[in-house]
Picture 1 (cartoon, rainbow, N blue to C red):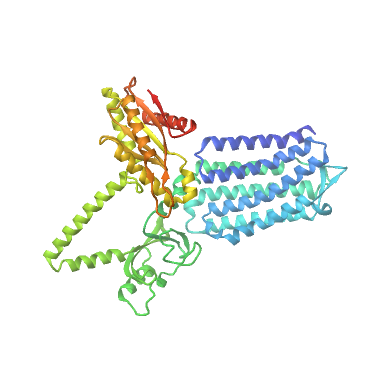
Picture 2 (picture 1 turned 180 degrees about the vertical axis):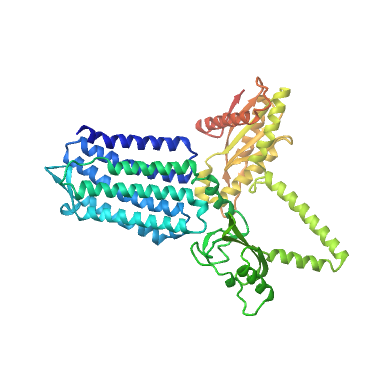
Length: 554
């Protein structure tokens, strides 16, 4: 029985080697991850068959028999799903259809696990190395054959379609894979189940079929690039386009639709699209009639029209263009652009042109508005919206430049990291509005204490960072003490709060006096290192009881 035992193990090892090969040799995308899970399921069958043969424990043998046949149902479902995806029929996988595909495997799993009255499998001579099968086994086989037939039918439809050229190679490999697997499974059933009374049993047939089908699929992955990252990413790209995009096949069936179009037109992938439904007016329009005639009678020509669309209570521009592959039209791309705002601007421009003087005045007004808007945007880009002080992004940009200059000219400077003590308790006791008021009040006190050359920025939450240029450690300590004392002496008066709040702060101080590294290309590295150091100093201040200053010199 030596060869019988080792055949399934050898096939399992080959499948495992292919698994490692795919994992190591391709850029892992989501579709590759799905395939690797599927490939792992393929590995289970030969592993279980090998495990059945090397144990004499009937319970373990039964466990591996059950696991292998539940895996068979999963493989059949997986092949069908991959067939649907690779042939471009993913639009059929709506929720109800997807759930329906998994109903038979679920029932199979339940029946296999329970094995009521041996309706799935019964042992021969007390063990499951040799066994007899019941109705549940034949239900499994029927399900596998049915899914294989459906897969072959879908492949037939894909190969018969006019867009076969785009997907012919990968569909052909799927066809070979499904055919090989189906043939070996049926041969295994016929020789080792139907004719089981005529020994010897031929080992590893289904395992060999699984291996061969996996090889065909891996060939398709590498040679035909069925998981091309461009194909994977294109949906994300078109979803970012503001124009509505509708892709139809040669039967006017929706095969793709982007997010910009969905709010305006109630369509789903798989629906039939009629271009005439866009024009909802009962009155005839000569321009739309010309567009419709070109669309229907001259499909290879581009057609476009602008019309009023009640769905958005505005104007849209429709552009229809054929998709041509190897000289054959395989579908259309229809783009729909909302022209309402553009038309409004055009009408406004026409009104402004009535008077040159009025137009000039309005342009001056618009220019002033743009100037003010740009000024506000620049201000918003560098300031914190709550406190009005600089934000972390601005400070980081400034420090990247300042650090390099300070290192170049050996100029000492200091960084303070300030944290409001027990700020979470303030939010919990009085609410976030009071917390925001405390933050703003604290910022005002800090601003009054700092020098004109110092830069204050909100680091995040209740933390603030201060850059003190040309400041030694001794000078920085004096300034930090003044800030701490000013905050401690300040009483925060809040509406609807019966008593004034007393606030304290903890400060981490980092002073840089000695510069040994002069690499002008590593400002971000130095900056991150400084932030980590001053953050540790702040942590020590908080750990030591808060309302104190911990300084570090470098």
